[in-house]
Length: 284
Image (cartoon, rainbow, N blue to C red):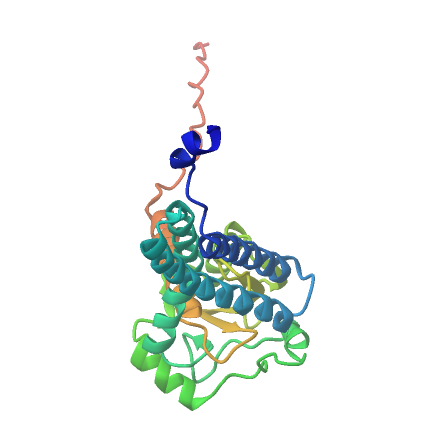
């Protein structure tokens, strides 16, 4: 009799498909985090890290499919699990949002990876050249005419920076901005006579995955003024998805702002030297 009395109040079982969708979503999020850590800290090469990353995305996609199947099962048999399905969809959306944005960038932007303000004579990778000789890395030499044409169409605002400052001052400001960005400086050569050309090479990282992108900066005198040329090139992949152009544009803006602010500072006046009044002399 007790079983009959309590039987109508027993809860419906939780859908196994709903639990599976949630578990797949959680696993995909953890796998994405692991792949990011692998790249950023260099535990493995880029290819295994990317395999982990794409595997995580596949799990997120499978989680969505299982979630829809679980929703249909709950609709038919009245089992529980809607909360788990919604949680799975939320995690899947967070995992897939950034890759979806990258896919949009890939379809919108040209497949180039080497951006420079001077395609005719781009700043060279000297110290960084030895880091771009491994398997799967892009070469240190400039990508060439095709890349220059595609860059001009996609990023027409990428141009040399003309500064109303000496080459030495422009070099100091540029080096300060590079250090502020926490880029890994590989080589720094301040302007030296007779040519007075400064050169900086550094390694930047992409925001999420932390892929290495190499930067070379050249500072040359132009009379009493100076010119700064910048080159940013992805070490891996044929397409940079706009990251190098964005890096150069931001550095150009910061250079102009920093030099303009420096030129607007009032010149320091030398401290006033008190003038002693002439000593009085009595007449004899």
